Image (cartoon, rainbow, N blue to C red):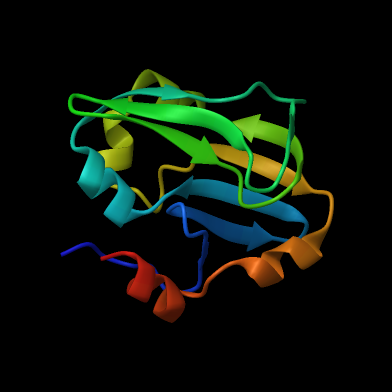
Length: 125
């Protein structure tokens, strides 16, 4: 049974967002990593790249699947987690601490379209 972390926002495509001022810290949910199996590779944008809400920004690869990552918000990538790039299995081990990118949001109102933990629980089945 996958765990859902309270206090985070979620997209229907299984990315989570932790909000820190106008910075969105983005990772993938426990449900998503469980569905994928052992993650072997993380493809992510570069710092300074622009991402758009609901547009692809990278991908995860596992022994059984490849899955695109979709940005829950629009903005500029201000940090990439090189540790996860080097050790993608961190996403399997601790999906809610193994963030992938941090985005300086262009419009924080986009957060209103994301799901809270209770709403996401209905999607993650």
